Image 1 (cartoon, rainbow, N blue to C red):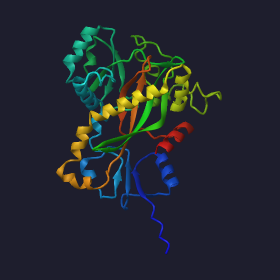
Image 2 (image 1 turned 60 degrees about the horizontal axis):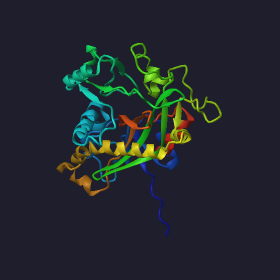
Image 3 (image 1 turned 90 degrees about the horizontal axis):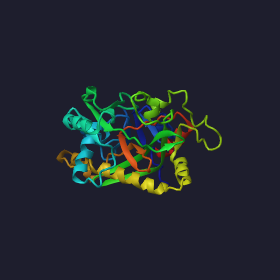
Image 4 (image 1 turned 90 degrees about the vertical axis):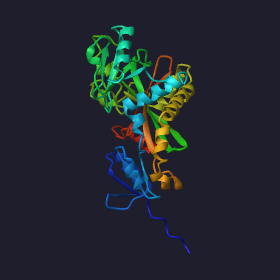
Length: 340
């Protein structure tokens, strides 16, 4: 007697705005459902509470961990990484010196005095994204002691390609927090500034297209070159590359891409180790004992922003708990569809 085919997986995308999720859902033969329907997978663009997770059944999964904002909010990430750096300074040296304001105000002002008026800091709002609210300032200005921001030493010596600064978007999938299980996606994006780099000084601190690598910022510049509009000889002039293209460039210089990738993987694992106790404790609550009797109910795709310096040493810039899955170009679609 032939077995009946299994019913399709039901995925609730009512809190997801990204079309690539629906493209993948249709290709997998899964069924999109709404809030009033039963579902096995819930995909949301926002963080979730522990109360939300407690309501899951044994067969339901959701695409966020409660507590992951400990590494995805800038102030919390800075506190967690600085705590680890004090205990293990030789292992946690992969992020710029960071001050959480206003709590670190005295240490910050002491750093300003010791480094002089030419020291440049980059100020970032705690929950900001897409470059909004970010500004560069030089030492000695009182407005730098702004509330609810982080102040980081600006990375003066970024690796440049054809004279342009860039950063990397690396995707990490966290499948379990106890034990910690993490997978890295082999592809990603290199996102370029759209004005050639000059070291920061008073006259160019406001030139966002030179200093900020955010795609949301640079796509507004007339000099932005989409991958589709780039030249046919490898698209070297595009403002966004895939990691395969970056690998080719790095290896053409005689350097080892595998070494760079290994160093990036190392900082991702260490950064997650800094918050793993918080995540673990959330799921060891007596109220959540039932979750430990079944497969992990949560997973999360994190978007790591990493910058290389002129020695190809990676520096962690920030972590995104809901990285953009917009598909503005064929390059975005190819990478993000495969990622999902």
